[in-house]
Image 1: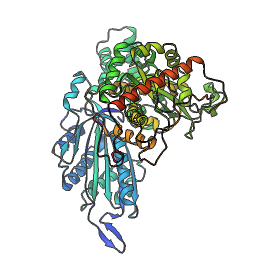
Image 2 (image 1 turned 90 degrees about the vertical axis):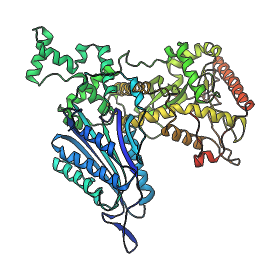
Image 3 (image 1 turned 120 degrees about the vertical axis):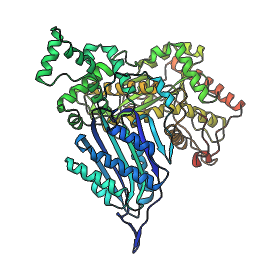
Image 4 (image 1 turned 135 degrees about the vertical axis):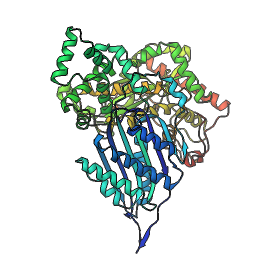
Length: 616
């Protein structure tokens, strides 16, 4: 499955291979230039624990792989392709892609393309149980698996997906993998080319082998939790259907199951329905899924809609309720402690980071009850839904609003939400408890929502406050980034009805929460978080004394229309002005405390050279 909680990767990066010089070009034994190729293969695995299964073979290869040497990585890549060839009768789907770079632009562009594909594929896994690089296994601590219960009764049959990514000299490999896969013969030709080219001279520069599933506990945990919520008669697990067929006592439900078994081959088990839905959320197409699971295109579409509506957005399946959260003192205290500890005591009282995320959709129609589709056209140049969300420091979604149109400004979208109305009415309750949210400069400052200072010059107390504010707020940016990387359905515009698009986004946020909550509590700031933070700091904050541009927009309470553009309006209500004044005073107190402790933004070269990182 593309959306998996557990995965594996074996990879390494080596120097360039030998080449023969003809005129002004360097040509390797595989041809000129350099290529980036990727091939993914899906196989049926009747028994995942069998020593002869592809999963067992990959596990053995990963344990013995010498990824710290060129020969070791060449042998590993070639051997994986051979193992797939030996099981060609089990292959049910495959895809290939290849791109060739000429000598003029081979260096940075090819390496960047390879890294982008690698990160995108690896980001689909919540955790890698095998992660070997340079001969060292960087896999997640095996102790973390104790967080999940053991399900010994889990089925042994599964679908395995193996992906090979290569950065290799020449154009031979990319030519073979750039064409469409239309038959099993095409798959054999592509795997044979990979197996041969991987061992050609010293042409293999980098390689990555990924496969899933490895640990089935997360998926089975989801199955059991959904079955508990909807009941076994609605979920119809494989075990339940097998029990009915085996112990036929003649009642009506058993007769229905037997009739389906004789006429259409039987009910589709709940585990399969959930797997189909997760595969669609992971970016799979209905046509591929229909072929993979042996069902019709229309039925795959129906299953997806049913699981989203009745299972993944079930009121009790990892519910996200901002108002209920703001009434839970214990939960708010836990989140406040997260931000306090992560900022080393600088940010105190923060109970969540707020931001907006525009999700691409196809233009809504009148069938969706939309009279003005243009109002969904965002300033980013596409139709979308403006999703307002709040997360804790671990990136668990605490609140979401998916009702705003893409053209609406973040500030307007948040003000139109039920949570904002509740916060305006109960602001003093949070103020007494010392709690507030943090947001970027798109929002207006309030007692319950602290934003950065406008036009803060480098080296000033306001600029230092903005730095620590951003370092805490970046968790919401990283949560959106993780959502976008994990759920491939967001890589293209959502094409369902408006109501089903909203339900799909909601389902993805709930599944995201389940995955994040299963992580160990001692997870540190990972590479994705750090890169997003550095990018945000570089774009929004001044880094030299003579550069006077800072953050803009959070101070003034700009009146905006339904399209998000500023409008000629009257003064803000008296209560809104009061909340803004309280928020400014509270923020100034934080600024003064940071100055009293002599905490400052790190030097400029911290951004540029990345020779320092926060102790998260």
